[in-house]
Image 1 (tube, helix red, strand yellow):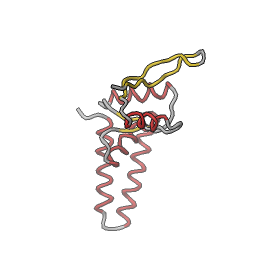
Image 2 (tube, rainbow, N blue to C red):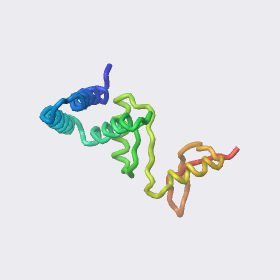
Image 3 (cartoon, helix red, strand yellow):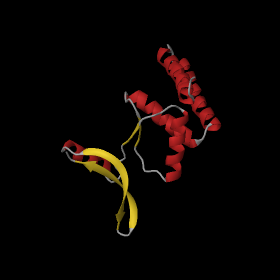
Image 4 (cartoon, rainbow, N blue to C red):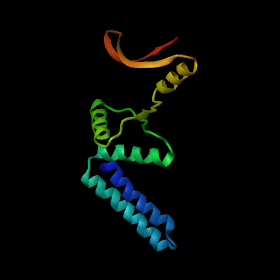
Amino acid sequence: MESKFEYYSRLEDEIIRTYREAKDEETRNAARMLMKEHQNKMLEWETLDFYEVYRAYREAAEDGNEFLNFDSVFNSEKVNSYVRIMKENGIKHFTYSSTWTDSIRCIWYFEQAGAQLEKVTQIQYRDKEIPAIQLKID
């Protein structure tokens, strides 16, 4: 069965194909308007969170990435919503590349130096629990 992501993506692909195959500016303008209408309808029918995850889905495909990617800092409510939406649409893997504090880049440096990403955990830090990435060195 086709997911909502696949359905909306198929419609966008058809609009893009019409635009690319257009022989004149009038047809290209009509395709642009159709795309805008498509996006507006999606925002009307779905939640803003759905639309944001869907855009990440489309961007991954357009950029040639295997997985959709998030690169912003989110609160726990948005993360819960995004995960629910991904589950509903069959998304099993995604990437997170926020460089807000360059923490992702630093983890990548550790991996390049031979450490292996093991899991996300919690640690005590200055009288509070905070999330942390656990790495191991063989």
